[in-house]
Length: 285
Image (cartoon, rainbow, N blue to C red; front, side, top):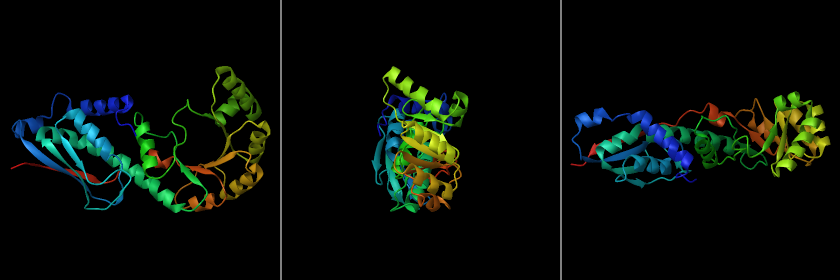
């Protein structure tokens, strides 16, 4: 991941401006300017780490003199009590960076941890885990990176890198056959090489999508595991298959047993619990 990506740097700068305003007056008032110190970033809960490399970028946006010594890298399993990293530099800058660093790292680690759990449930299975576009506004690149850090895979990044004809598209255009036909024409006219996915609500719509001969992936939306098995059998490798809707950790294996290629899980990003991580700072005596 390129943490120097302009979109990520802009997000960091917004977070800094949001938190610091016209200054960290608590630190400025109580600690002499120029005081040096050391911070320890501590794990308080087991999980998968995501965001420590990003933390270095955040700290350097606040103060270039900060030196971050990373002891555990992104993607690693972490245990309660682990020291993830230490940072040295001006105490004012260390304290100014604390909440911003933790806000990013805790959320991204929570996403990586939840993803890792789902991936482990399906360990050895054909089916792969995908994320969705149900992300925090402004944080999509980072949250999708966290999914990959946890062992998952990314679905499309936005509306621009893949065609997905959902129920609203189908209903508004006059049916699957018409929606796909006009989509093919559009892509040809715009010289775009984008894959086409169609969301289906029942076996009849699966057949309609197959009949177009132009669909790369068929989404089985809110199908039961048994209906997914029927659909996978009907599709017979003529298109990729993706199950979505109503799927959680307790029934993941049932859906994977149907033979679908992918399972997309919105909860990986839209309702994840942040991992408990803290940062403790002391002056250098």
